[in-house]
Amino acid sequence: MDCFYAAIEVRDRPALRGKPVGVGGARDRRGVLTTCNYEARAFGVRSAMPTFMALQRCPKLIVLPTRFDAYRKEATIIREFLYRFTPLVETLSLDEAYLDVTAQTTQPGSLAQAIRELIFRKTKLTASAGIGPNKLVAKIASEINKPNGQYEVQPDQISDFMAPLPVRKLWGIGAVTEEKLRQLGIQKCADLQCFERAELQEMFGKFGWELHDLCRGIDRRPVEPNRPRKSLSNEETFTTNLVTLPECEEKLAELFEELAAELAQKAPTRNIRSIFVKLKFDDFTRTTVERAGFSPTLSSYRQLLAEGFGRADKSVRLMGVGVRFNESRGGAEEQLSLL
Image 1 (tube, rainbow, N blue to C red):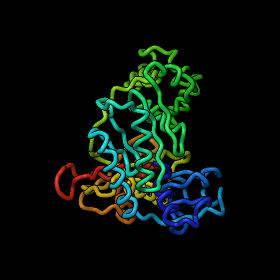
Image 2: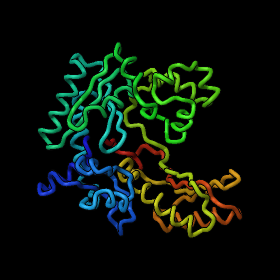
Image 3: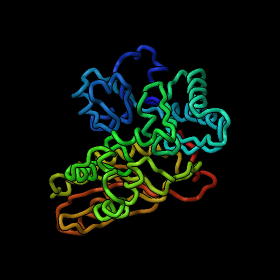
Image 4: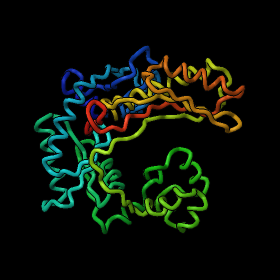
């Protein structure tokens, strides 16, 4: 879906049409945006950006509180549409899913068009699609003709499609790995394709083995319907180590806001088994404080942080916060299928 939450807000409030809109993170401007529309993105605003930074880039940004009941309602409707075309639907969040339509006789491009038209006709919300022989290619292709478009990559087009792509497009490559590759003179998939599998494995361990395939558009992951995730977390490595507990608490608040947004988007109905805080100290030793039965609130995470910080008289170079979910697939603990 195209900027799903923001699109729903604009649809439901026609006066917002054409204006830059962000959703979430409005609380005293310390929060993090869950998403924003394309008018806001034109100013450099993006999802997961701190609200104060978004307002610096776009002073006229209209920041609205999240309405997850409304978003889940629309996602349920859209999910029902998807299952009309195939039972093989792997949902990633409220607004994104993989569909395996291999068994369908209709051409996948035509199916994608039909699904998008059905969604718009029934909800007045636009969707974009990527069509490809595997999840990696389809995911990358889905970003090309946004918003309200689609792009298809045939099997014999994969080589030409992948070669000019920035390596950051490959799943598993973050800022650290991207910088390491850049230092090696590797910026595009074509550059990465010049290395043998053994060379990449020597440089990046097990992930190097996967990189050899990914840069060539090879992805053997199947579409797996309704696969619940076991945990959700985010972390940050700091450019300057944090020396005091108040410094850590300030960063904890930012990480918590991001985690809360992720939970609301990706696992709004999951039953949380435990919460945890992870710390890496300046000597690279680690500690994790985890508690079952604690609710994922900022005050709960502060308690865990204080305990972890007190375990060592050292500065902190990395902090992470997260939750672990109950793995039961029944009753209230089951994860609903999301889009």
